Image (tube, rainbow, N blue to C red):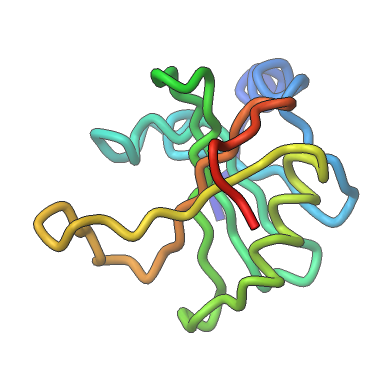
Length: 134
């Protein structure tokens, strides 16, 4: 377990004040960016959460895209097994809200990165409607 000093804890609390989960089922943890770990997109993850049952871990970064601001959420479970769709929907709702739309991408094989048994959701800003649906 990583221990933060008082100044680091306070800075972490200030940085995450507006990014609190929408549910009390999640505990905020230090992120790779706060711990100055990793590089590339992994090093940009500035929020990290663990559910109260310690079953799921989620790390998040906010990025600007042609579709607006998007929260990139990386999800994995402690068993390193498949995560059912219903669980990903629950996690999205609890962390970002029921009124936000998210997508999961299945890339072209040439763009595939599959090294950590991690699932990625891209969560759009409130009010964004996709040009397709059911």
